[in-house]
Image 1 (cartoon, rainbow, N blue to C red):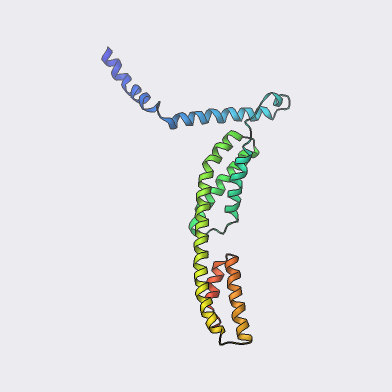
Image 2 (cartoon, rainbow, N blue to C red):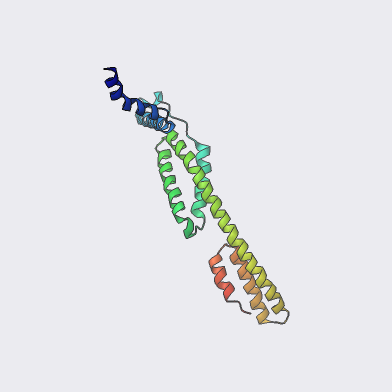
Length: 192
């Protein structure tokens, strides 16, 4: 009887031995418990007579503002096609976080902010590196063209000289505005 009992219980024992030490499973259960507890607290906090007895998790204002700044920078940046999918994923995750924050689910919001922040930082660094690379390449092209223009300006006078100087000014302005597509089109149509 002992052998049959052990054989029947062996799969259960193996499953328990393998699953219980699993940290991910414990974390998911803890998150589930925290989410449901927070959902109940938020619900109770909305009731007029009960809300004074319910304390919500404090809002992560500074952390929220920090990540919001990064996301706003990513929204405003010109994103090349190479990083469009990453940008969409970050912005979608941010919208979910904003909804959580507005709904006063602050604990879950903070947890999601901790997940989003590294993604946003990585994307921001990639975009900054990409912009710096484009700017460096444009400056190299501009400097080479400027050297040629200086040689040509020595021989030109009057209206032709003014056209070349205005052309160089336009190229510098395009670099300052970070409009590298227009810069590349303009650099091909040099007036000299």
